[in-house]
Image (cartoon, rainbow, N blue to C red; front, side, top):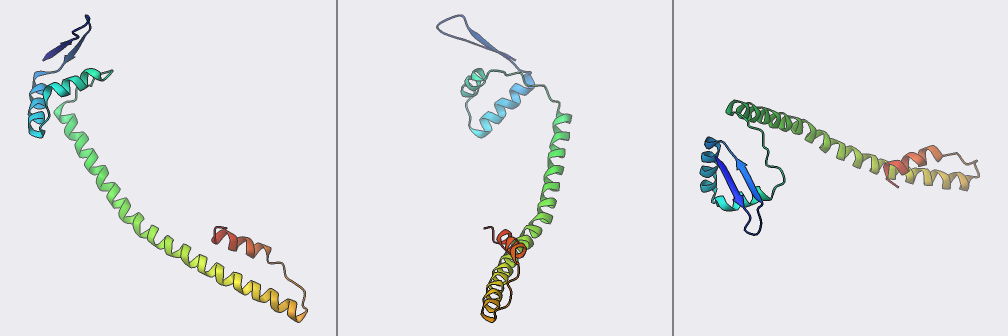
Length: 136
C-alpha cells in the first residue's frame, strides 16, 4: 500500500510505502487497541525517517524467542544477585558496628595509658580503617 499526504499550502508531500499484509495487520492492531489510523499517519509523517527494515515472521519469532531467553537469564541472575546484595548489606552493618566498638576501645585504651603514665601507641592505621568502614 502506498499512502500519499499532501500539504494544503504548498507542493510538499509525504509518501509512505507499506506492504498490504502489514497494512492489514496494522489496521487490525489499531482497531483492537482503539487508535485512529489518521492520527498514526500524522505521527508517522512527522517522523524524519520512516525507513523501517522489513522483518519476516520467522525473524520476528526468533527475535521474540531470544528476548524471552534473555529475560529468563536476567531473572536467574537477579535471583543469584539478590541474596548477595542482602548479605552484603548486613556485612556492612556488622562492619560499622564493629568499627564503632573498636573506636570506643581505642579511646578507652588511650585514656588508660595516659592515666597510668604509659607511652602512647600509634593507632593511625586502625583509625584509618575505622573511618573507611564508617564512611567518614
